[in-house]
Image 1 (cartoon, helix red, strand yellow):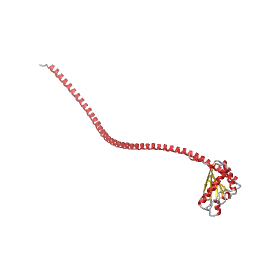
Image 2 (image 1 turned 60 degrees about the horizontal axis):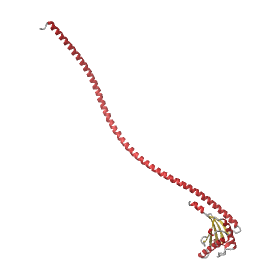
Image 3 (image 1 turned 45 degrees about the horizontal axis):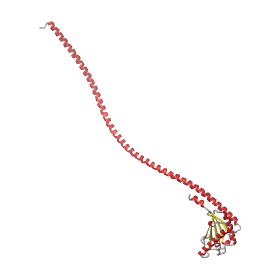
Image 4 (image 1 turned 90 degrees about the horizontal axis):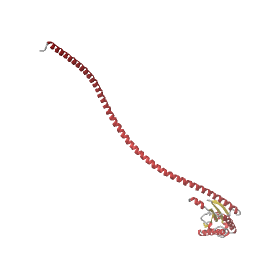
Length: 293
């Protein structure tokens, strides 16, 4: 049996333990309530944050969708521009090749132009030389004409005429100075004129001598050819027998009635057509050489 005192002590310990447990329980309940409140608050905060996050996710999802669409459009534009640029690049490369080809052609043309300019300069140089030679020949022809006129001034203008044509000096002697009608024998006065002319031509070795006989239209063509040729040869004989002129410088021919200088319809015209023409031609070897270079 337990004594009352011991019982009371045990009861007091029990009550004390119960009180302690009650206190612990109350403290625990208070802590739980506090923790529950904290959790509820945190949960509310978390719910709010979650809602915000969900809202942000939805917004981001919409933005992502929009961005995806924009990206697709941008990629499409990029591909289109890329293809365009590829086309432009291909066209540009083609143009570059064309430009290179044109440059090569231009360089070739420039070389041709340079050659043409060089050739033109050479031709201009030759032309200047030709012009100088032509002027010199003109001057020589004028000097020769003056010398011949001075030497033959004793002969009447109706008997002979000295003139320049196409750079050549012509000494036209009419029939009455040289021959009797229908004859190829040269008279004394005509022989004198031919010898005087020949003496001038002896020293003028750079001149070729063409002797042409001419008639009027009286008589047959055959007889006029023969007469004009015989008369030209008679002049050749006088020159070669009485001067030191080389026969190689002389060319003789008969022209008959075919190169009249006047109208054969009247006596005056016929008289002018019956003539010997001594044509003095400057040697043009140097001139031809320059022309053919």
